[in-house]
Length: 72
Image (cartoon, rainbow, N blue to C red; front, side, top):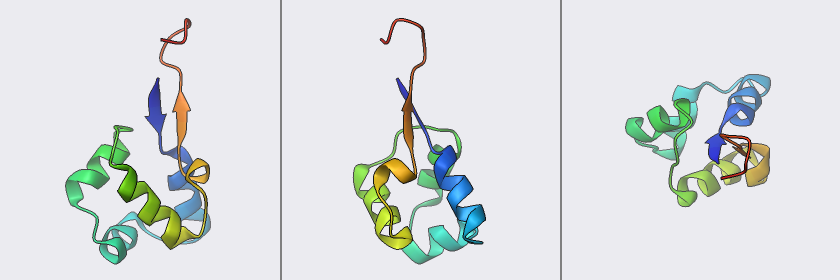
């Protein structure tokens, strides 16, 4: 399984919020933003801060996606 932040990027576009604005408002490290752009894991605390900022649930900004056919 891997993580996908596609929902986050879509939500930001819909709300007219740039990733730079999100990063600055929440004081998210640029390295963390790079990880999210690459669909890499980031700290749960960061995801929860984003959820608080966007007033949404964690499932609204990310998904766990299968990387192969057997669920491993």
